Amino acid sequence: VNLDDILNKRQSIRRYTKKVPSKADINKVIDAAVKAPSSCNLQLWEFIYVSKPETMEAFAKKVTGKMNWASACIVVAYDPRLTVGRRAGLVSVGAAMQNLMLKATELGMGTCPMAGFRGDEFVKKSLGIPEEYEIPVIILIGYPEGESNKTYRSKPEKVLHFDEFESHRPQLKTSIHLDDWEQDAVLEYRSRIFSVYLWRLNLRFFDDENVARIWNGIEEYLPAKAEQGLILYPWEDSFIKKLKAYYKSLTLADFNKEVAQHYAEKYEVMGEVMVPGSPLKSKNHDTAFILNKLEFETKPSELLANANAALKPGGTLVLTTFDRRSLYITLLRWAIKLKYFPDVYHKSPFYKWGPIKFYSKRKIKALLAENKFEIQATKDVQLNLSDSMIDAFKGNKLVYMGLKVLTTFMRIGLKKEELHLIIAKKQGSV
Ligand SMILES: Cc1cc2nc3c(=O)[nH]c(=O)nc-3n(C[C@H](O)[C@H](O)[C@H](O)COP(=O)(O)O)c2cc1C
Image (cartoon, protein in one colour):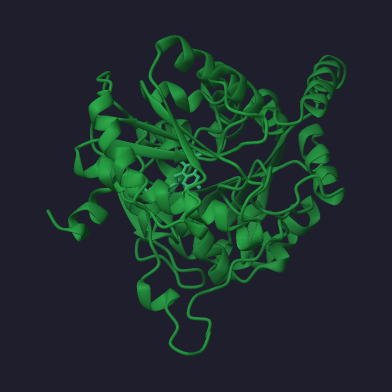
């Protein structure tokens, strides 16, 4: 095997067999890790191999549920008090970690580095790691089960600069506000992050019960002879399944090629790539659905123009948006205003989608009129979203508990609607 083979083979593995790596193999892996360069050769790293089922179970509860994916992990610890400048200590640990993962790959093992965990103190106590140490990463390790999906990479030409830094690819912004972003940067963000999360998107917004509620709101407007349905920017599994059963043919369109392909294969339907502003190839759909996506769209008018062009005359558009008056959205907007989410990624429950924008009902109506849609009905559908949504605040125990209590009271007392549903008819072509 050459290095390229191993580089190409290494992927973050999130499903493992029950087989636990032997201590001899772990020894080989760490032998590779310690060959990494380190600042001043201080070799500040320590690796704690954890394979005791009791410890793994305790970690799964208190550190991260991702522990359940594997039977063993390597906790990486280092002393951050030395080589502070340029974070040289941490960079060195990163080099060791990569050696470790490549060696594991060569030996037929799989790994998944994880920064997404909590309970550092618990880990330190459980394993006897000194108080002053930091745990930058925990690496799951074991034998891969099944195939994993390749994640997106920018081409080397895009990140390599000769002699001068020129921007070859859209530069990501940090802002959570969609208006601060360019369209191509949003697409770039989504290409990167979607390729990780697409396979395990699990927001549970629309479980069967919620789908039924939405369905009740739209059913009377759907054609009796349902020929062609179109979902623009699909993402809710349960809703796609429902529509697949209803329509003779279903097309799923997204501006992201990977996303379009993924959904098309997963549901055995038509997948189309839709570039913002240029219409879809498939036309004459009876119904087009845009489900909670306007909020993430930098060019909503172009999206609606595409929907219009893809519908047959008199065709129906079903659009759902978050209701700005709903409790959750109100809290979310305040959290954004008060900078509880410092950037698009950090803490934001929507980081998998990127930056967000909330539209007023009036604005949505204007956009629809502009794109030759006549509104037939608007409804507010109450959804049971609170649990999954409020999970986003789990990191902050106090806020989390407060929200739990608050929503419980609100739910009993006010029965707030959460989803705004608009059914509109295509008037003419844009
Ligand atoms: C520092 C670091 C932290 C990461 N944290 C997590 C994590 O908490 N959970 C997870 O599932 N993957 C985590 N990953 C894995 C990345 O998602 C993954 O490396 C990336 O999507 C590229 O995919 P690939 O490793 O399969 O090539 C982490 C990776 C790195 C380098």
